[in-house]
Amino acid sequence: MHPHLQIENVEMVFSTRKGRFHALREINLTVQRGEFITLIGHSGCGKSTLLNLIAGLLRPSEGVLLCDNREITAPGPERAVVFQNHSLLPWLSCLDNVLLAVDSVFAGSEPKARRRERARAALALVGLTQAEAKRPHEISGGMKQRVGIARALAMEPKLLLMDEPFGALDALTRAKLQDELMKIVAATGASVVMVTHDVDEAVLLSDRIVMMTNGPAATIGEVLKVPLPPLREALRPRLAMAHDAGYLASREQVLEFLYRKQAHVEKDAA
Image 1 (cartoon, one colour):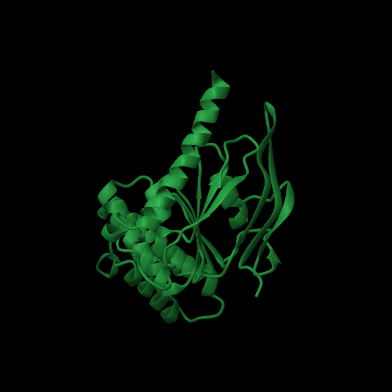
Image 2: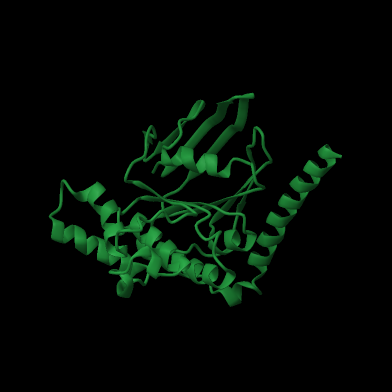
């Protein structure tokens, strides 16, 4: 069986007023169906650029990206994106915000009642059935982000792309949503590629952690396989992970990589 996502020899160069900016070089990565991948690295290492390439929001300067063996040339409903900013329309209810995404995918193939059921089911999956009639200003930041996740899930994507979805939230809300995400991944079986700056988040959620070198011309420095059962097979209790040898070893390896890269930057700047 071919990989769900293939990234082959991808380069990304931007034209700016100051000239060419080489953002990414020699990116090669495969993601298997149902796998949870996190991209981690220092600011400016091209994590979000790579995610935007997978989403089809950018086209690579060189190389090719394939989803289900088809070249990614534009955004598509099989690849849903959750941004750090929830991007909800303030004049619509939570249900109607989700329904917008459902209609964009299923309007030509399903009746309105069925599409509404899809939107309600997605909100239920993230625990927001009671908030479906509320508008964004009436709910908390964490709830808004859950609506954003529901909107993406309602499209029934095969690949869920997340760009620091919990980065703007407080620690307690972030932990709750990480736990919700684990349950969602287990329930849906979707493949996930997520950008994060949080080492603990990466280790807690990932099957593999892709560590990016510093930019410009950033590339994949190391790929760490996390020695824990996949989320689709078993959830990872947060408190138990604090004492798990595999979790702690993975955390140490990612931190060591990041500190080594930071020390290299500081040495170059000296």
